[in-house]
Image (cartoon, rainbow, N blue to C red; front, side, top):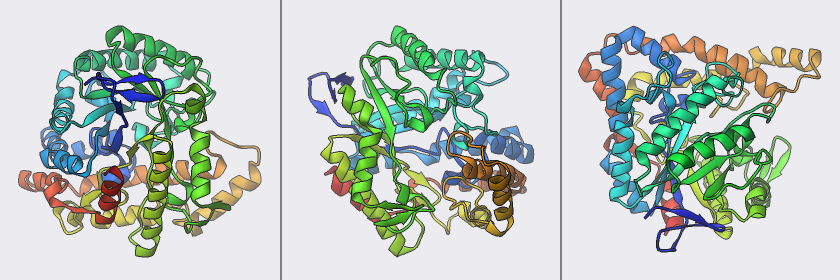
Length: 457
């Protein structure tokens, strides 16, 4: 059943066309702040929790969280919806530690193997997505980056480690037909755009030497929007775009309507999709949207508009025969198909803290950039008036100032408070927190589940 690229389509061994449609398993082997409720970046959070409850009990909690977050019931739910693919983001730290580079941690494959096998039982493909690379391949929390500097592109050492890790991953899965392929670098952010092209050449060559059969899913530069960096169209490769709708962000306006001065309607969505897939369509390669999806507010009227955005995007993807992977499957309530129960142990303990994060706008994903406006407005005015020539990568001065102050400084200042909430818990209580993410303890977002199931049918 190993897939391969044939022209503009993915096909199975018998030549049958396969359009991969499903979800991303965000927040699992690559944890993210808005998905499971902690602040800042994953490794900083884990260190703080370890300092409070100790190494052994930290391992107890996080291993149970990995087990509970995705199990047989989750795979069965997705299969029942008609999903045929799950994109699985992983953090390199499961497979290699910074103090012992180039040494593969074989036990890191344990949970990944388990979930890939669970999905395979339902004939669901997996795409393995390295979401956090050594040195951080982009400027944000989701590459487990505690700063705003993507050091991966500055140091050959980090690039060498990534190649070595991917050789190990490819060797591990080269004979697995239910692994659809490898997504080696999620949302790269090479500021100058000079390193990424030659690095992709090197990485593709190394991967093909180990595993010539599996499909490669390659993201463009600048968070999978810029494909000019590719110097050739590699064989058996899908070039992956990400297609988040402007009106679907937390700061999005009405739909249809104006967001940040732009009129956003179905036509706008289609033009944005066409722009983001120009390279793929010109090269005749398969169309696959690796990430997309609106965030939900809890306001029924606004959320109904967000569902309409999603419905329109799915209709557009169908029209172009594009595959897709919706972000994300499970969380604490912002985007997931299912989410932890507000009345359950985890949000019972951390709910007020999550509300504080929201009030401060401490998560880039899910904040409107207007939180604490009375405090931050003078600073933004100072930056605009005193530094008019400053246009930092990737999205300009206003976003960069928010990243530095709100999503790094404030977020990191919140880390000790999050970790302190683990203090005094016994082993049973720690396991109950982790089990809050088991499907049986979650709430289903029925309108979203119904919308996706209808489309997949």
